[in-house]
Structure formats: C-alpha cells, structure tokens
Amino acid sequence: MTKNKWIDVTAPLVNGMVVWTNDIKVQIERRVSMDRGDLVNNSTISMGAHTGTHMDAPLHFIAKGKSIDQVPFDAIIGPTRVIEIKDKVSIKADDLKPYNIKRGERILFKTRNSPASWQNKNFAEDFVFITKGAAQLLAYTKVALVGVDYLSVGSPVDPEKGMKDVHEILLGAEIWLIEGLNLTDVKPGNYNLICLPLKLMNAEGSPVRAVLQRIP
Ligand SMILES: [Zn+2]
Image 1: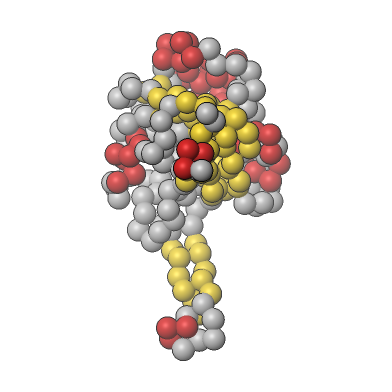
Image 2 (image 1 turned 90 degrees about the vertical axis):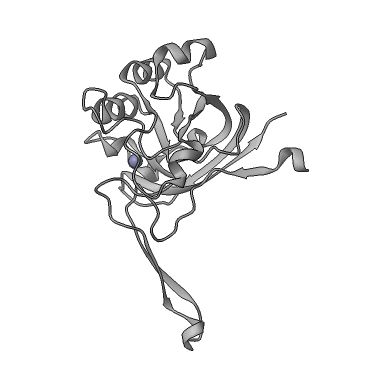
C-alpha cells in the first residue's frame, strides 16, 4: 500500500499565504462558530481564482478561449510525467529535448521552486519560469497539460521573457495549465494525476486539489 500512496501536491490554503503581487489576500473566516455559542461551524472564503495551487484556462489570456468549466477531464486525470529541471533560472527548450515529450502528454516540472519558494511568505520574483522557446516547443508538441511549481508559468521580472508571451503561447495552443504545485515530496518519474478545479462557470481559472500516485 505504501508504495502507491497518493501524494498531495496542493499548497494549503491559509490566511497570510503568499499570493501573486497584486492579488487579494486569502481570507478564510469562521463566520458562524460553535466556540462562540453558535449551533454549527460555517466559514466564508475570499480569495482570487489564481490563489495557491490553481489552473489557468485559455480564457485567462485568450479573449475567446475556453473557460475553466470546459476543461476536459482527460487533460487533468491520467498518466503524467514529472520532469526535474535543475536549471536555477528557467526551463529552456534545450532542457526539454532529452525527454522526448510527446503529443497529448501531461507534464509537470519540478524545479528549485519546490520547496524553497513555498516556504517564503513573500512573493518570490525570481522563481524558475518557462522560457518563450520552451513554451513554443510544448505548444508545437501539443501536450495536453503543463504544471509548474510556482504561481506562474512565465516570469514577471522581464516582460521580454514573458508573463504574457509564455501564457499566450501555451494557452493559445489550448494547453491547460496548473500553477502553484508543491512537488517537494515527488521524485521525477511517472504518476497518475487527479487534479480537479471548481466548476466556476465562465471563469478563467480556479483553485484545485491535485494528487499524484506513482506508477511502478
Ligand atoms: Zn494562473
């Protein structure tokens, strides 16, 4: 049993957790509370759709793109490859070539972002990101899903390197994105993935719960 246990790769949603630079802070509040003499416990939540471990739908950067409620289950459930990229700055096209990535694959990138960036309560601008060249290669290959271990596939530092470009290339090819994975406890290799976003109608993103199970 232990060999095939499910590994939770979801960042915990808690008040005070790191969010994108201009995003609203997470607020989870016990609105009705048994500690205060109420009959039940009942919480309210307030947060951005791109908080913690979440998915981007094409609609995030493509005006008429698909929304998160339209994600095909085949993109987010099934065999998945975790590839470790040792480069401390970015994921480049040359880094991907040895892996012979194929059409329709689900690919998660583990970098130094796991765990370093998640331990930091402040937003880490210098996270490892996907370069434009690597995004083009993934789009050309037509993978089904790409996952990264910090809050964005593209770097916010240099617009040339491309928040906008990298999102547009990947989402324009209708590649579904998971951002904000925590792959600290995951070795490179083959896994089964289950990652389910909320059914937020016509929304461009959603928080997810994502779990992996090693394929022997
Ligand atoms: Zn996002």
